[in-house]
Image (cartoon, rainbow, N blue to C red):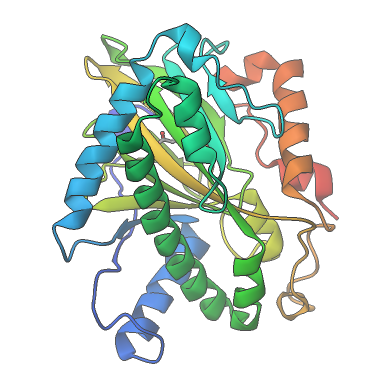
Amino acid sequence: MATLSALPLSLPRIDLTSEDLRPGTTTWDLVRGDVLQALEEYGCFEAVYGGSTNEPDQLYGSVMEQLKGVFNLPKETKQRFFEPRKPFLGYHGDLPGVPLYEAMAIAGVLTSPAIQGLADLLWSDHGNPRFCETMNAYAKKVSDLALLVKRLAFEGLGVAKYFDSHVNSTTYALRLSKYTAPDTMGAQLGTSIHTDKNFLTILQQNHVDGLEVQMKDGKWIRTSPSPSTFIVIVGESFLGWCNGRLQCPRHCVMMRGHETRYSIGLFSSLEGTIECPKELIDEEHPMLFKPFDEMALLQYTQKKIALQRSVRQTEEAPDCTLKEYFGV
Ligand SMILES: O=C(O)CCC(=O)C(=O)O
Ligand SMILES: [Fe+2]
């Protein structure tokens, strides 16, 4: 991770709001080229999305309000949200090396009453309908963005025929995060350097910046999204699925100053065994990874973190679990 002065660059910004952004139009073809290039070069871009009505801004405001509300609950209440089914789900706070960080990760949003289940747990007297409405609407909106990005990327890679079956095997999780203000001007670690293990991540934040993304050449970009933009990040599952054609960037959160940061991410995952389509394997692109699944990546990562806690605070964090564990 870098110091602020060493971060002159910014991520590509791609406008996905055009009414003409429909398969078959010139706009579609141009945007597809931009998305593919950004994902090949950075594995990441800033998407402008959903700005044509007043509704997104209202939704953004409501989401940020709900984030504050949920993290303001007493610690014992938040700790009720324990989710042993998959690593990194449920409530996490007081983690070694990242004292500013707290998170709540909810699996099965969109296809199960997971959000209502969490609300019943946290607000057992009234089930907080406002929280549920807001989070459900948000998950729906951002999953539409995830689908749009994946459709463009699959087409760009020449494997559009896999899109429908991909959609049918996709699951979504929401992770709500809080990074308490460090009250220092020097940078403090918000969350450690990592690559996401899922397929595609889409992040939004309040007005406090902090997310840094590493480029191919090792340099770091500090992101500065606005309320109408989202940061799109390729995860290791997508990296494996596309046979390494896209970047899967390391990223982290560095906190400075006196304001608390809130962020929300929609993590889409591919269920079951992940295998690269044969069209993406040829002489020039030999198969890089054995078939794998996200759960194995998560379990391996969790074990590694437990074994080597100090890694979380240094540049020595593992580059890519997928390469280490499933590399050919
Ligand atoms: O809070 C953010 O902006 C990034 C969070 C993140 O990288 C993650 O939850 O995987
Ligand atoms: Fe991440």
